[in-house]
Amino acid sequence: MEPIERVERLTDEVTWEVVDGCIAVITIDRPAQRNAINSGVAAGLRMAWRRLEEDSALRVGILTGAGDKAFCAGMDLKEAAAKALKVPPRDMLPVLGDVEHVSKPTIAAVNGLALAGGWLFAQMCDLCVAADHATFGITEAKVGRGMPWAAPLIHMLPQRVVMEVLLTAKPLTAQRALELGYVNQVVPLAELRDCALNLARTIAANAPLTVKAARELVYLSTEMGRSAALRSAQHLFEPVYLSEDAQEGPRSFAEKRAPRWQGR
Image (cartoon, rainbow, N blue to C red; front, side, top):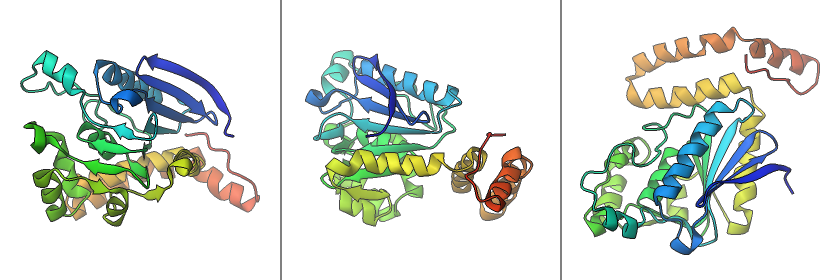
C-alpha cells in the first residue's frame, strides 16, 4: 500500500490526497450522481489545481472519480436547468490550460463514463489512463448544448474521428480510445489506481526542470510551425542546461547513485 500522507475534503464533492509526498490524487466524489459537475465540484477542482501548482513538493497530479461507474458524466443538468444558463461564462469550470494554469504534469485516471465535461476533464490532463470498461463521449449534440472546449482535439485525434465524435455524440470505448492514441494505457478497474500512481512515480523521479520544459515543448509545438517551434524550444531549454540539476544528472550516473534533484 502506498504511503498516503494526508486525505482531506476540499469541498463536499472533491477529495485531496498526497501520496509519496509528491503526488496529488484529486477525486470527484459524487458517485450516486455519476460524479456530475455541480458548483461544489467546480469549486473543489479550482482549489485543487491551485494547491497543486503552489506546493513545490508536489510533482504530479492525478484526477479521478469515485466509484466504478463514472469518471464524470458531465454537467449536473438539474443544477444547470435551475440556473437557466445561456452562454456559459468562460470561468464556469476550472479548465487546465484555459482558466487554470498548472505547470506540472497531470494524469486523468478514468474509472468509467467520461461524458461531455467528463471528456473535457480527461482531455485537459497531459496523460490519460483508463479502466477497460470506460467510455468517452461528447454528448452535447444530444442535449442541444455546445462544446467550444473541444477545439484542441484536432491536435489529439484525426479530423474525421473528431467529426464522428462531435456529430454522432456516440462514445468511444476505452480500447478504441487507446488505438487512436487518446488514452495512454487501458487496464482492469482494480489496477487503475496503481497504473496512474506508477506513471506518476516514473515522472516524479525525473529531473523536474526537464519535465516542466518537455511538457511546455509539446504544447508550444501544437501552436507553432516547425521552424518557430524549434527556435522556441531551444530558448525553452537554455535554463535547463544551465541548471544545477543538469550537472547532478551526469554526476550521479558517474557515481552510480540516484540523482538528488533540486529543481534549480
